[in-house]
Amino acid sequence: MILLVVGVFLLLFLWEAPGLVAKEYWRELAVFTILLLIGLVFSLLLVGGVELPYIESFWIKVFAKVGKALTPGS
Amino acid sequence: MDQGKISAGQLTLLIMSFTIGSWVVLPTGIQAWQNLWLIMFMGLGTGLLFAYLSLFLFRRFPGKTLFEIHERVYGPVLGKFISLCFLWFFLQTGGGTLAIFKTLLRSTVFTATPDLAILVPLILILVYGCRRGIEVIARSNQLLIMSTVGLVLVSILLVVNIFNPENLLPFFNLPFSEVIWTSISLAVFPFGQNVLFMMILPRVNRWQKVNGAVLKGMIGAGLVLSTIQFLAVGVLGKSGQILVFPTYEFYRMINIAQFLTRLELIPLLNFLTMGFIKTILCLYALAVGTAQVFNLRTYRPLALPFGLFLLLVAERIFPSISEHMRYLEEVQTFFGLIFSLLLPMMTLGIALLRGLPRRRMAP
Image (cartoon, rainbow over all chains, first blue to last red; front, side):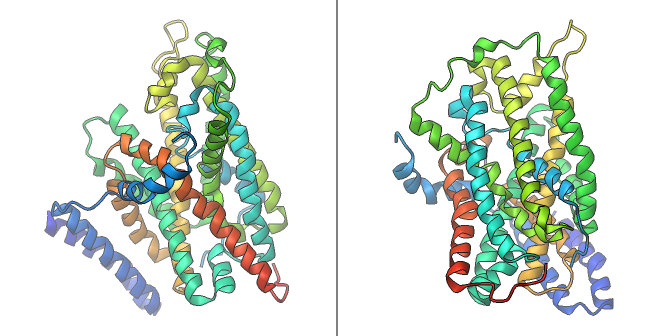
């Protein structure tokens, strides 16, 4: 599965990058590559079964105290 | 960058679709269920105040996106940092919308289908649409929003035999503080999320008409949402409050002479298109915004990685729909207020204090 994910990301890179190189869009290529690498890392973590935190659960913890103080009736 | 232009009318329709978005299937303020259709108008009024605050900022910097305004008002470093915070807001909004529709589809129609089989085709279409530019998105939306409004109008006729006006009574049987709180939460979501259009307004061909277009779009969306909520309460009664997807359930109850039944798939697909437009606008704002933060010449290569990010966020935004409902109740209003009111207000305040823009810019 990990190989499959790496292969898909490689295909996506090969699909986009040559056009950017041909137009000499180096800055665009750099940002695209960095974003794709971030996506690859998170995808591999998910595929590898690493328990990443849930975004809204994180915010619930952060805002819980503020919410309780400001919500009427609490 | 995208050179496409849209008309004020197209902007109105985009705002309608974006606002209807995911709220139509999973409403907030469910604790005020019976009166939600009335409180919607108070939320709309407050949401319009938020919108006009942002529009006032836009009119001071005509032709500039929110991120360009940030850089002018705060300087390059702080400006980029605030823009990055907004990028997170757009990512979470888009990913959340995808996650809601994925959950809806998985719990109703595609019960045995893996998440990726639902999300990957959707992401591919989103990326393709985003790369084609705002003109193509706006033109696609024209047909989709018309069919949704048409569906809502037809729904009024379809529910005549199961609609019980007594279900709507009593009016305002809530503490006043709860009415105010619900209206603020409605002003933030769905109406406040329209701050995203600050990234799209410079693409309107006649920016002088932007104020009217925003007003019409938000009022149109408010009317559609209020009508659907009105019908849902009239059909489902108080029991609608305990349902996760009340709109879907109320369409399920339509039964015309044992002949027209099980119609829920039509609105399901229709509302899915509203979620699609909301997500594609988030993706567009993400790609264009990032391109502006990093001074890129084109946003198009970024559509694909951000499509992947949306997919990842949709997978990891909430563990269950009950956790998401808890988030809507406890966090959404505070979180949304930061982006739809506080940050634009702060930007406007600092721009006024600094006397910006110093020279009148050409539109």
